[in-house]
Structures are given as C-alpha cells and as structure tokens.
Length: 566
Image 1 (cartoon, rainbow, N blue to C red):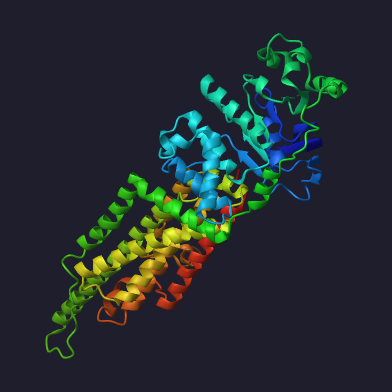
Image 2 (cartoon, rainbow, N blue to C red; image 1 turned 120 degrees about the horizontal axis):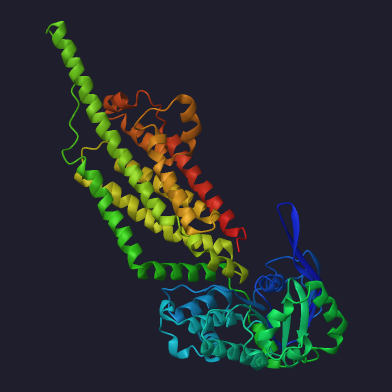
C-alpha cells in the first residue's frame, strides 16, 4: 500500500514561498489503477514526482508497504516512471531500444533470460509486430507503448505515468489506457497515471482530483458526478472554479471517509510475481558501459548528417592546411662568415636574411596554428552536443539506475576514437604533402592529439553543464572562436592580458609547444623571428597544460552529467 500523509511541497520565487502541493493525504492499494486529474497547473506532475522521489516533499511522510520512503527510497528495480517526453532514440529499432534498456537496467543470467524478458514485454505491450521498425517512424500511440515497454523491463511493482495519453487521438488514447489497465490487473502492479483527459475514467479503480495543489476527491470514478453534482465528467473542471480551493479541500476532508479505494485491502499473494521480483537485480557497471557504447555507435553510424559532417571535416581540413604549404618551406638565407662587400651590400643582405626568416617563420607558425585551430573546431563538433543533446533521456536513465561512471566512460571511449582518427590523419596528411615542415612526426602527432582531446573534453564539460544543445553549441563555438586571437600567435598580447588568458587557451599551448620543439632544428632562427614578442613555453610544460585541460573538462563533464537537471 502507498500512503501519503500531510504531504506539502513549496518552492521559493523572488523571496516568496509558493505552495504547489498542500496537505495531501492519500491511500492507494496494491494493484490499483489510479488516475490523477485536474486543471492545468494544479500540481499533478509535481505530486507524481514527489512519489517518485524526483522532488522531495517540504513536509509530510510517504510509505510504501510500511516502508518510509524518506529513509529507504524506491529502488530502480521496483519503480517505473514514464515521463511526458519520449525516452527512446529515433535511430534505434523497437527491439534494439528494449534490449538495450534490459542491458542497462537488469542483471540477466544469460541470453535466454534476456530474451524471456523481451518476449514478456512485447507480448504485454503489443509491440511484437513492430520490433524491426525504427522509433522515428512510429505513431504517437506506438511511441507511448514503447515508453511503457522500456519501464517494464524490471517488472516494477509501482508504475508512474505522466501524461502518456496527451496529444493522442481518441482511438490511441483508449488503447493506451486499456493497456495500462491490463498491466495493473495481470501483474498486481500499482499504476498511477497523471492525465488531463477525463475520458475512460471507468477503467480506473479510483480517481484523484487535484485543484490548486489540494486533493478535492479520491474515490471510485462512479461517484465523481454525484460528488461534484454534475451530469458528466467534462463539467467537473468548470465546477471547480465556482469555489475556493480551500473550500473544496475542507469539504473533501469531511466526506472522504465515505469513499475508499476498493483495492486497499487487497494483498499480493502471487508467488510467481514474488519470485520474479527477487530474480531481477540491477545491471553491473561493465554491462551498462557495453550497452551504452553499442548504442552510441549504432546511433552515430545511422545519422547520415553527422557522418557526412565528420568525414567532410576529416578530409577537407587537412587539405586546407596543405594548400598553404604546397610550395614547400624554403631554407632560410644565411649571413656569410666572411664578406668583403661594402657596408651597404652587407646591410641589404642582412635585411634580405631577416625577411627570409620572417617569411619562413610566419609560414611555419601559420601552418602549425592552422592545424591546431581546425582540430579545435573538429573537437567542438565532436562533443558540444554530446550530453546536452540527450539530457532528458540521460535524466530518465539516471533515475532508472544508470551509473554516471558507465555513461561518461562510454562517451570517452567513443570520442577517443574520433580524436585519434582526426589528429593522426591531420598530422600524417600534412607531413606527406608538406614534408619540409620541421619537427619530429611523433611529437607533432602527440601535440595534435592532446589539443584535440583537450578541446573535446572542455566542450564535453560545457555540454554536461548546459541544459540544452543550442546553448552548449553556441558557447563551444565562441570558445573556439577566441582561441586564435587570445593565443598570441597572430598579434602579441599585452603581458597582463596574456598571463590571464593563456592558461585557458588550448590552442596557445599546442602552438607554443610545437614551435618550441622545432627551434632546435634548422629553422630555429626563423621561428625566433616571428615569436620574439611572444614567450614560447617548453614542449613539456605545454603537454602538462593540455593534460590539465583534459582533466578539467572531464571533471565538469562528470559534475554536469551527475547534477539533476530534470
């Protein structure tokens, strides 16, 4: 039995306390199919989130089977929560979506055990004939069935549904409500459905009516019209506005003893259900990581737009760099040790040598910085939407028992492969077509990899902190845009500005470290000629700073992904 006693929930807005749920007292029996109805903004979804533990009540007590949920909350195995939004990826099929949900949420003995769970779910929800269809082609009603199916993988004892019938046509709405009704009766499962619709109320065991945060009715649907003195359920909402919320609440407190959930005294005596519940436990971190990695690659490889964009950057960006170095890098002129020419000729030759060094140094510096900036742009595309773009699904899966460590490691593994491909291809392609570019190839590849990894990590952190992909993408683009001017590679910055900005600019450390590693070679003077107003750091220091950027980015990725943003 689920019991809510004196539940209140309030928030503060502009220093003012706003009560969203007020003095709620409810008793819901096992196996009950309950509707929560009421006008928009009356607190239906808020009440459901309090029961789920997403929102913590300001006061009051909630118990489930005499267990205080404040001390021992619902486990991800025993509670299912179906939010208003879709919790499936468009690029996956129905079968893939359910199987991945099983692997994320449930510890299975073997493949046959997982297959049995899958068969049970599709049979209950009527999705067996849609198993090969991708989510994006499903109708609204079919997507709602899939949302229910994903929550049934743990065979939860309590299933909370938030507006799962909203926006559906009458036929689809009838089918979904009938499905939930059968799910409650076939498995003795308590189902609470928040809905604005007053259709199909006869299928529910009891109906809770909320008005401005107060419970103003909780009882059999057959008594609704009599209690509110209306001829049809559609008249209830207009009738509520004729009295103050507190009047309705006080009236209900006087008459509530006459109404009772008919299943309050019902007890679960199914040994089969009890055994099945005991067999299910939460999936391991390793299993979650494997399922998430598999899912990520499937979604990525089926997204043609992303594939074209990544391939376009992978092949076009190195070509852009090579175009500026196709003529090769000439050897700089030198001043002869002995010169019998007159002073004017010596001065002219020195000027010519200086110009040669400046030209060659500028070309080397420009090629290095161009590679670095293009890789930071690739990095932004790699991860700027990675977490923010699936925020709602992430929050739902966290609620269902997903470990942040498994989630983040799956992202790192995926992004690591992209970064390796992009960095190695950039370095080798440029080396092949501009072989005169100085520097050790291994050192170049390490620096290119680190700057790509650092910016990918930072953008992943931004994606974790931001609430939506648009904000994350915009901030990441701005960050890449500031890399070039704040690096000091084009125009030397004043010392007091460079000391503030350079620690945060990945492009500076990659550019500076690359040029420093080249100074010991034949082009040292040329590099000095263009960096004399800019303090280059040693390659070792630059590598350390880039690693620090990676660590900081991953830290914020973890914090952002872990922080509730539902």
